[in-house]
Image (tube, rainbow, N blue to C red; front, top):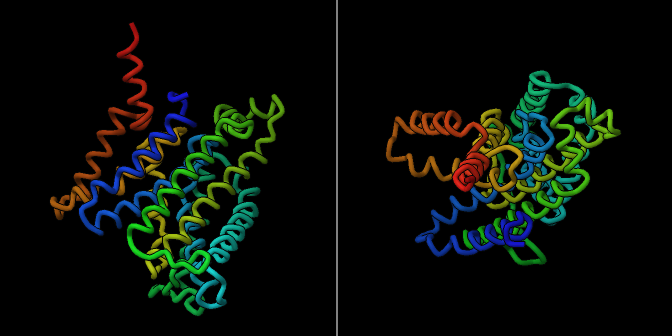
Length: 313
C-alpha cells in the first residue's frame, strides 16, 4: 500500500507539504512557497495533457490569465462573491477550451504547437488591448478572497490553501491516470492510429484532457489573482507558457510527482541563483541543459531508472 503512488506517494507529499513551514523563518519564504504550490498545481494539470495525452500546448498561460481576469472582473465589476467568480471563470474557460479543442486537436506535432501558441498570443493581446475591461497593460486590482465571509489573508493562510489544493490536484490526477480515461490517454499517446483501431474515441479523450488541464489553470489563476491583489496581462505571456512546459519536461513527463518536483525546482532555483546577479539566466540555462543531457526522461523517471539498475542483480 505504501509503495503505491495513490497511497504512499500522496501520503509522503502531504507530510512534506505539512512539514515544510517548519523551515520558513519569515514571510518571504511563505510567499515563494505559495508560488511553488500554485505552479505545481498548474503543472499537474498540464502534465495530464502533455505527458499522458501526448498533446503539446504552448499557450497554457492564456487559460491561467483568463481565470485570473475572470475572477477580477466578476468580483470588482459585477460584485460576485470570490468563490462564485472563481467557479464561473473555470466553467467559462472549460467551455472555451472545449470549443477550441475540437478543431485544433485534430492537428499533430508542430502544427498543434503553433495552434496552441496562437491561442495564447491572442488571449494575451486581448487582455492588453481591451483596457475598458482589463485595465490594459497597466493591469487591474483584485478584491480579497473570502470564503463564507472569512477573508483569506496572510502568507500562512495562503500557504495552507495552496497545500490543500495541491494534494487534491495530485489525488485527482492519480485517480484519473489509473482510470479507463487514463488508459485511453496512454493509448492515444503511444499510437493514435492503434488506439482508434481498438475502438478508442481519440478526439473525445484529447478534448477531455485539454478541458481538464485548462480548468486546472483557470482555478489556479483565480487564486493567484486574489492572493496578489493586482494582475497584469504579462501573467498570460508566451514566456510564461514556455516556463510551465519546461517545468513539466524537467520533472518528467507522464509523471504526476515529477511535474510537482519540476515546478518546485524551477520556482525555487532562481531564488538561490540571485547571488549570481547578471549571470543568473546563464547558470539556470546551464543547469537545465545538463539535466536534459544526462537525464533526458526528466528528473524523477531518470532517478527511478537509476535506482532500478542499482537494485538489479
